[in-house]
Amino acid sequence: MGTALLTDRYELTMLDAAIGSGTHDRECVFEVFTRRLPSSRRYGVVAGTGRLLSLIEEFRFGDAELGWLRDNAVVRPETVDWLADYSFTGSISGYREGELFFAGSPILVIDGSFAEAVLLETLTLSVLNYDSAVASAAARMVSAASGRPLVEMGSRRTGERSAVAAARAAFIAGFIATSNLEAGRSWGIPTMGTAAHSFTLLHDSEEAAFQAQVDALGPATTLLVDTNDIASGVELAVRVAGTALGAVRIDSGDLPVQVAAVRAQLDSLGATGTRITVTNDLDEYTIASLRAAPVDSYGVGTSLVTGSGHPASGMVYKLVSHRDSAGNWVNVEKKSAGKATVGGRKFPVRSLSNGVAVAETIYVDSAPDANSSERTLLADLVTAGTADQRYIGAAGTALARIHHASAINELPDDAFRLSRGEPVIPTDYRRGIT
Figure 1: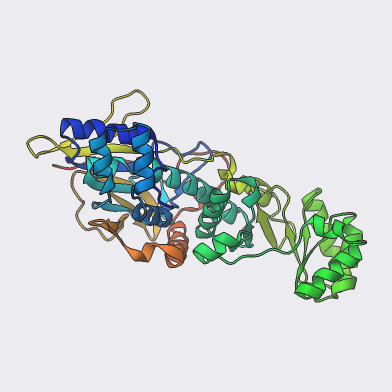
Figure 2: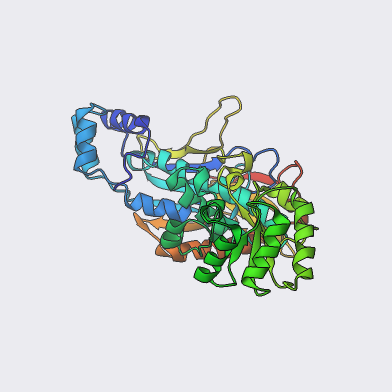
């Protein structure tokens, strides 16, 4: 299935009018950025880039799409004919997936004709806005967990395709696994899962349910102990699986109190190596509140796949420069109150001091001189219509995870505070000479 109609109608009507005026072939530079971070966030995490590159490769208008456009008179017949041969032949640069971003960061730069580039607006924003929101929330949860592993398990709390995207974004930001099998198949993410309360309730007794699970999965499995009474469930779990029981899962109750009690009970029963995992509507704040509790791992669902209160990253796709009728480059920008943009091609760098990020500088119209204390942020993602295959698929997802770990290690300690605050490093524009 192609991706060409995963877009808004006005992309095509703009194309239609531009073809009519003869401006559709003007060379343009579009830019993706967010005007501001959510008030409680000190940084954002770029995610979705690898998915987007694959979707752009599939962005074609086949007979079915062209027929629908023609039958519904969305655009004029000559524009339908133009779309029949569409493929993106321009170039795209951007922040590597897993990179950190701030207000104004030009995380994606699209070079191409107006006609080719404008059609990618909605698809680009739908991918980057959602995936980056999930990754940004996931990164906060990872830091709150202080090294304890987290598993993504929010598939039933979002759309079926969003669930796969969310699992991928969370993995890039540091989660270790997902419950979603399609995410495992598509992106090479480890999958985990054992049983829900319905499995326990299916059986004649909790003991029978535990025995069936242990018989199928072995004593190293994780048994869900809160279907009835937690203390009784823990005792029964150890009796059935023995002291080699892998883990118990708690999905309800006052977690700090319950976890402490369960740890003490497991130890008293000789199951000192049995781990405790919790999965009760967690977010970064509840995870942080459990730092002193003997929790071994976390499973996170609803809060993660909804961006922990910020389900979109506020990214926009704006024209910043184009050639005029004489072939000269013209910088363009919006003046709208509260929505002003900065025109011109951007060259962003991250300034470091002893390996710690201290600022992001966005040079406008000219690249900066080489400086060993500045890290260049734009990478070539698509060249003359061909995507760099390193950033696509399971291998690209793994690469993004590695890059994120490196980028987040550059942040100062203040970045990981969960209280409201300003972006952890300032963003500064420096305009060069065109």
